[in-house]
Length: 254
Ligand code: PEP
Image (cartoon, rainbow, N blue to C red; front, side, top):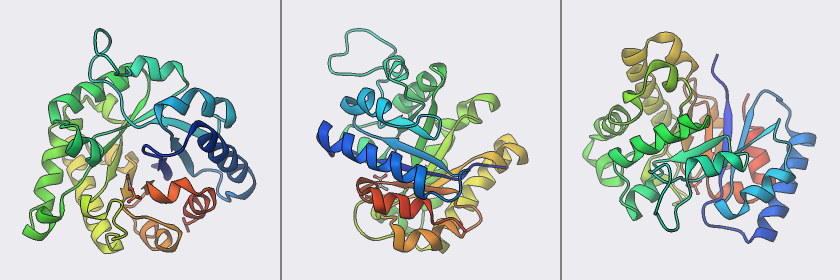
């Protein structure tokens, strides 16, 4: 059966000192306060903090993730960080296709495909984000938008490689806005994504694929969201920057 996961995306927040303190608190609280030891915990600090955070956490219990990687393996790409470099910091997963990267850095299906392949080649898991914008939700074509994002990237993988992918459904209108999708809206989309996976790769793979919800998830709404059968956890932005809130969300599974 698929794994339930709560992943924290720290975005471009925290100095190294603040990030170290946050990682230390999360590590301690995961050890002492997380009731279900099976729940996967992932944290994605900024690239600059990865090496230090890797030393501060129990990497057997908490998975270190990055927020992005380069679309090329190596070479003259000033300022970029390759998937291989990340793997040498102890990174086990990489968030790809976050709506902020699609919107502000022009990430396309083509660049995302290259990144997904590089992440897998370097033995890490892609956390692949998809989700519609507000106007697409209002126009009623949100299923088509998400289908297109998934079909043109992760559905190009082989069955074996697709099994390494974690999907994060993040409606853009809910990210950082305080406006959460209702649990029914989340369930509807998650069930739809799982149906697409069934059609492409079959029931077993679909049953084993973790599909996270992201968008203003916090301790006060996580219980309701996580009670839905196809919502396997969350990708958390703002609330992952406070250890107590992040742990509250991790403890929200029934
Ligand atoms: C995110 O950035 O992935 C996210 C879900 O952010 P927030 O929780 O702040 O809406």
